[in-house]
Image (tube, rainbow, N blue to C red; front, top):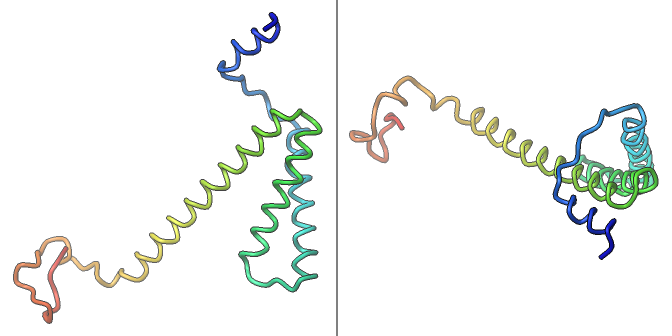
Length: 136
């Protein structure tokens, strides 16, 4: 291992410093985003896909492919892989958060009638299977 390769290996675990996000970085994300939206709308119109899930999935896949190529052309393979994985992790976190949010809202909306003052101060000791009432 030569000296330059050793220096790269030794600094591989060192944290990278974040740099300022400039107009170039914004264009590198917005451009593929707009391209993916246009291609998705074209594909959905051509194939007659309705609903929400198919366009979102197709648009996300197209965005990831286009963004990976733009990042690879501007910053190299390693940085492109890092950026694409960061976008994938962000999308996964947003999807998981959205599912959790929808679930909580659904439970609250469907069961808001059960939230009476007695829910918090009474127990189920005197309530049978056919008797209404009782608390948590």
